[in-house]
Amino acid sequence: MTTATAGLPPEEADRSVPLATRFTNWRRSRPFWGGLLAVIAGVPILYFPYAHMKLGSLTVAMSTTAGAGSLVIGVLLMVLGISAWYQPASRIFCGVGVTILTLISIPVSNLGGFLLGLIPGLIAGGLLCAWTPLTADQLNAKAEQEAEQAVFRRPVENQLAAQWAERNGQLPQQAAAEPAEQPAEVPAAAEQSGADE
Image (cartoon, rainbow, N blue to C red; front, side, top):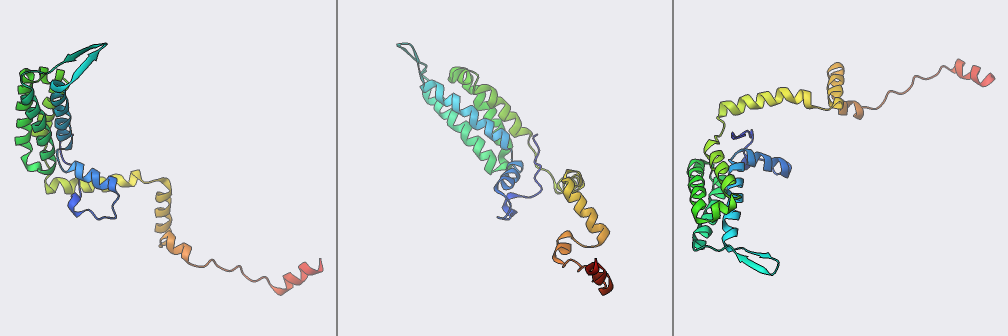
């Protein structure tokens, strides 16, 4: 999904909100997956020109004359991915930059890190360019839709508690706080008849 879906910006999130919820809101309010794929694409492009593979006793160096170019491309891909996270307004610039750098890595860095950096880099560029934040009207409509769906997501116990509260006109916590009614006193005649037996 390439559109922001957070109803609560992370800057306004209360500290009592669980960390997982705050991270989800942060992730949904920016092009997270495009940035993550850009960072992932930079790793093989950066790694393979400097790697040495051992085949038995034979060491194969995959270094090219463009090792410095691979270093620059890999680092820039990672920087653009992280920049898209913290400056979502620059997502188009970052997406175009990631796409161009990924294509440049084909001749410079062993076919874009043996396609391990090329494919995620091209997908990341597309995701960064395609991501758009929701407008205020869309956020309000989404909040209303989630409120309607929340009724069906609640556990059965919560639904029964809500029905009980509607019928009795009070909350279950209030009912628990009230003392239980004392049983009616048994008439003295009934007590005496029970003692005679």
